[in-house]
Every structure is written in C-alpha cells, then in structure tokens.
Image 1 (cartoon, rainbow, N blue to C red):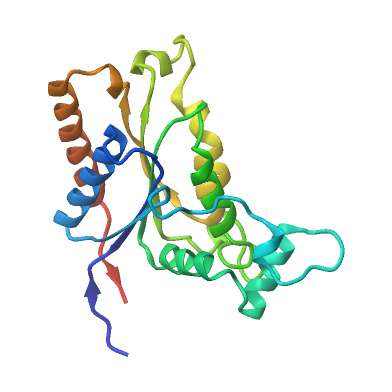
Image 2 (cartoon, rainbow, N blue to C red; image 1 turned 120 degrees about the horizontal axis):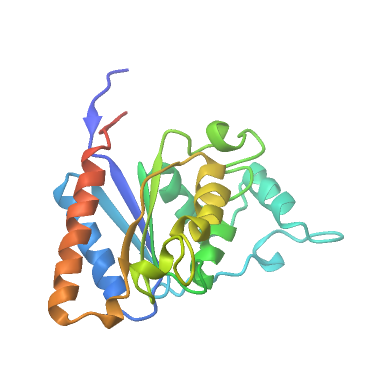
Length: 226
C-alpha cells in the first residue's frame, strides 16, 4: 500500500459556558493558529453542544447486578453498543494527532463538563485496558496532547512560595493521571493568567502570545504518515 503525507489533525475540546469569554477567544485563536500551521482542526464545544457529562447506567445495555462503569465500557466496545455520541467523540479522539483541552481552571482542575467528557470518552477497552495497555502501551501512544487554559489568579500566585504553589502541582493529575495514562505525550501547557484583570490592550497582547505559543508547539509536530 502506498503512503503519503497528510495534514495532521488537531482536536480541540472546549469547555466554557460563555461564547464571548476570553477563554473562548483564546480557543478560537489557537484553532486559527493550528489551521494556519497546516492542521485540520476540529472543535468540540461541550457547552454549546449540550454535552451530558455524567457517566450513567442508562447509556449502556441493561445491567444485571451492580453497575460497574468500566466493565460496561469494555462490554460496549466489544459488542459495538457504545452510546452514539460517545462513539463519535471517541472516533475523533483516536483519529487526532494532537488533542487540545481548552478550559478555565476552576477549583484548580477541569470544569465538570470537561471532566465528564474524559469520564465518558476515555473508554476502557477503547483507549486503555482490554486490548490496550497503559501509558506507553495505551491506544493513544505516539500522539500528543496539551492544555490551553486561563486562571483567575496572577502568575506569581502559581509559583513556589506563591499563594497557591507551583502550577505543576495542580496539573499533575491531568497530565499524568488522564493524558499520559492513555498514552499521550504531554506538551507544555499554554496558560493565560488572570485575563479578567487585564486591560483590553493586555488581552489583545495575551491572545498574540497564545498564537505564538501554539504555532511554536505545532511546528514541532511532524505530519502524520498514513
């Protein structure tokens, strides 16, 4: 079979309830930057799409006995009965060369709707476990992921000796426990600190910095060979 270089695909999963927020503007800027860098960009806007974040019994075939979510995910993968919305998002995830999670940092973590997306779409048997292992043996090994987010506090608050401590401490459970767990190579995050405290001019400059950062990261990603 002949091979050819194809444009790499970036999947952006965005979680902010306000379409006119800085977070959404930041996501749009990143999407444009990736597109200009040669990526085919797909955006999943979880709030706009009305994504249901709860991993629930009702999305699976009838269960006899206690409901064990990961066991039911495995069964649904094996039997081809995954929820249609989950299947569609899972297919997009598996096809993407780069995953970008876009969100505001709420309570030092992901917004609930985005955590619910991970709960439902990082399917056991689909991206890890079953025929797949963990970390370097998981289904998304060889692909890359990055976080694109905003904070409420200034950058000095997220440093050693700052009010909150190092940002790395808050991102470890996402980087290691979610992304690396299913095989991703995790890239440096792109963070805008405290955009609500900025002037319009400063926010414009911040979006420029986001554009530059995303382009720099994208330039390090090789085109996929199919």
